[in-house]
Image 1: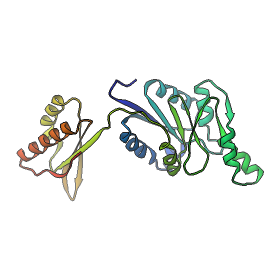
Image 2: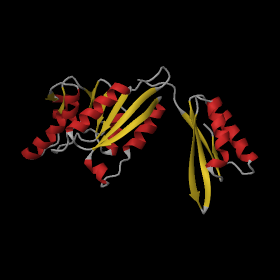
Image 3: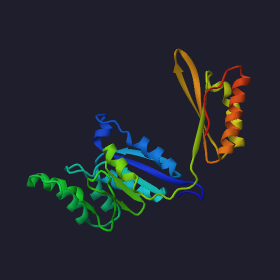
Length: 250
């Protein structure tokens, strides 16, 4: 589990369509950024198929090791939407029909066979609490530290805002770009990282307009320390006779 300062999360993206490449996942990016504003740090992510054993095992592994587990996908009306039954199995409880979700689903008239399929979305593990869906559609649900949301991005976003996260200090970031290789400033970055262990310094090479460069991103909870590290990196770049560019302060 996390230490006193860091509240951690894992994201489990469930769906064969993601693994096949037919659908591009955007949920992880949104979730990580959103949780960052709540003082929760995403430390792991899985993309897994619609297979009972894989979902159950991954959920159980994640919920034992992270403060929050968020899943997306697999709670729709079709036969391959198996997340609800897998979460029930992971917690060793029954799968039941939630009257509140069922009532919401029935508000939209449909032929009997279509309604029967839709009502699959009303199944939740016994003892689950609901996650409000601000679009007005069927709700997601929570079991202890596991929060189960839809895979459709706009619906997931309408759910995650209704989960009451209790995070630690908010992580801020700042950055600077230098048209020089990582290896040219590697020693200085290593020293800075050792001197500021509470700050995370990342370097990301790129090629732009036939020029090679490095984007340097600094993350941490102490804005004063972030600025100090950023200034040191800018001074290092200048000392190498290059110009710090695209400076973004926390």
